[in-house]
Length: 104
Image (cartoon, rainbow, N blue to C red):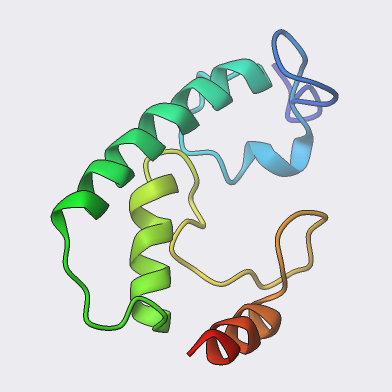
């Protein structure tokens, strides 16, 4: 399957977007539905990790990065790293830092 046949549209049997092909760790994933199943399993593991952890500063960069890596690191290559490019979802890294500083 070429890199152009990756997920677009809703979940289920839709094909994927080319951009996501290089950032998802599992080459066998062909649909958004398959990727969402792996995401859910990874999130469950991350939440179990979170339940066992005690952090002094949950609004620190270190905690946020580690939590993101635990929640999404088994599926996404960029998990636990700040984005270098803008995306349609989430917030820009500088906005995240401002929000975390405001919450402190």
